[in-house]
Image 1 (spheres, helix red, strand yellow):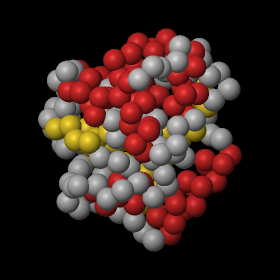
Image 2 (cartoon, rainbow, N blue to C red):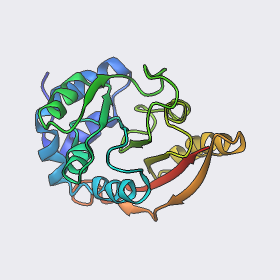
Image 3 (cartoon, rainbow, N blue to C red):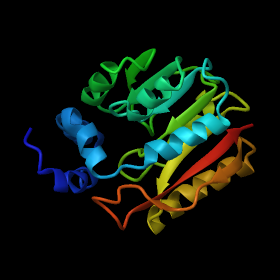
Length: 211
């Protein structure tokens, strides 16, 4: 599959409709993905890593990297001593790149928004970086992330600050809180997540704790 020039790759991904096509495009992008995001000034990993270290249990605890992509997050956490991580992603091509980094105990192809092939309470902590958004991981993804995370465990996830995305996810976040399935811990201020490529796009990173 031909892919566009680096400056147009994010728009190419955002314009994709359907999980099959999305997986194909991520497969095609996988080998260049890390280099491209570095060139965009990608800040989400450093923010999410800080929140994992702040809120997650010990590095020996089992952690889910949901929507792991090429393992950018897991590679850095592995350097910091996290040795028991599981990666899931829609794209097998991205997971193949992640596997080569040697950071994960297990890598499995799964789709956010569908039932995850894990038992209840499988993980001490869950992180979903750069994946929970319309067209990728829908609001319903949060139900499964709560289900597979143990009571007391944090769920750390980023969200673009566009009004439509926040509106749809906020309804699910509030419902989970009203149902007593998780409780709010903290959220960052908005920040430019890719200042060299999309300076008008900002994200926030949320932390909730499963109850």
